[in-house]
Image (cartoon, rainbow, N blue to C red):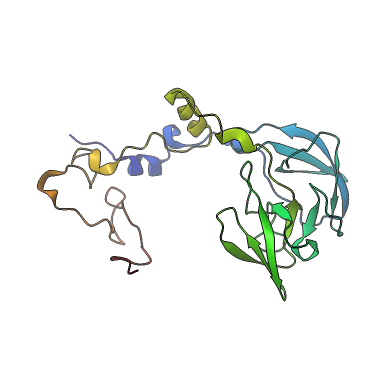
Length: 233
């Protein structure tokens, strides 16, 4: 007798495939209004994030940002203006070209979405009118509005991938803390009763494009692909 495949079990929402809510108790967002300066009151270790977080006190408001490289407790950071210093939160229009930045807003005042993982950063590559082009860590350019805010500097914790994960148990707990599925078994390696792609008998590859109205047990592979077929060079 077969059992529910992993995609069904995850969709059910049991504790096995659900992240601990405590891991994401720190919300990383800028307040809508930022003017003047704040102080880093504490550097926080969060199991749900790859980088250490900085707890910032602004007037009577507290918010969290990914800590920048070289940040210390008690350090003051400025909001707005044109002073280019690590940790300052400025609008993209006030940041000169070739300046390293992170935690960039997708739209003005949304709180910062892009480039938050440990050791990552982008930089302003060119300015055309009201559009600011940023070279992302993926080496691709992305266009932003000039009023979007970002933090000057590089995200702390850059050496986390230098040391290899020696034991499978350690890798398991790292993934578990963030609610990630690990280890992932390849579907074609499974038995036919455990997955629609299971069993290699017949050597007739099945379509990896799922039907739009397929039930959860069959909704695997490519879901609503933008394109199909062989890519022409």
